[in-house]
Amino acid sequence: MHIDRPVGPVEHWTNGVVDVAGPGDERLGEATAAIVGGVGWDAKRFDLAPNLLVLARTGIGFDAVDLDEATKRGVMVVNTPDGPSVSTAEHTAALLLSVAKTIGVHQQRLREASGSYHTRSEGIELHGLTFGVLGFGRIGTRVARIAAGLGMKVIACDPYIPGEALQANDVEPVSFEQLLERSDVVSLHAPLTSETRNLFDDNTFNQCKPGAIFLNAARGGLVDHDSLVRALDDGRLRGAGLDVTDPEPLDPSHTLLTRTNVVVTPHVASGTQTGRDRMLSMAIERALAAMAGERPDDLLNPAVLEQG
Picture 1: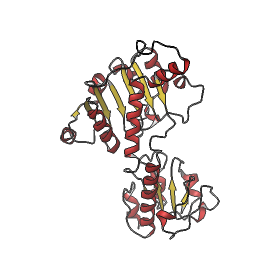
Picture 2: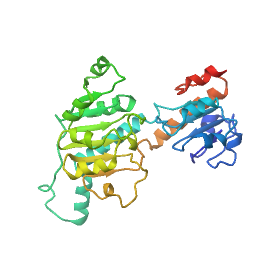
Picture 3: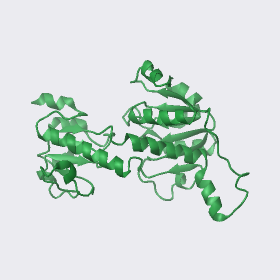
Picture 4: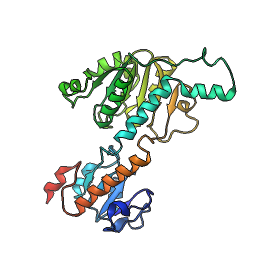
């Protein structure tokens, strides 16, 4: 079993039944299973692992894996969608509160002993505002509950979730256009696909409610960052909280890292010890099932099983 990043001893989850190698690629050619994070898997990388049976993602997103190539080679690809949900939802809430309450600004003013702290505060109260969720999956659902707990009205857009299911969670189903027009906070929780890449561009941001807060803890490729900067510059957006960017990480000189109304973290939303352990244990569990000839949970390319 190959593991592509240092994670410490994994015998706790493998029970010592497999030989573990990595993160270097020296023994990748021997591997029948690979536990992978953000490393891209295309035809060239699959060539390095001719014995591979299963590739298990420690997380939800699988845009870095060529599923068609994996299927062609008979490699099962699985993910761990329940693994990062709690930590990522909590991190999204942290971004929201940091931006809305201008935490970084207050901290800097205190360090500078600049005074007049209360009268200069530009934080806003969230209670009674509208929180818009784009993508009502595991993470989006948890974030919606947190927003509701803050007294916010939650609306959501997800073409794959029936309106009745949203309403059952006390969430109002809306169209994408309505979500942009009505939301005081827009929170992204959608997958990155060819259809959603750069979904948020100049046109989209121009439809947002003036003064909205923009949050993205999903994928950086969902957003045209030049358009995001323009929306911040012209005041269309009050601020932004980002855990993901494109590219990652941003260059230290990037304008998004110099703004007092923008909080950026380096794709660490799921990076709590509990979250990492959960994702790793789930990925190994699925890999071991596949290696034992069983159908693993969260199989992303079921067509691979039809190839015999």
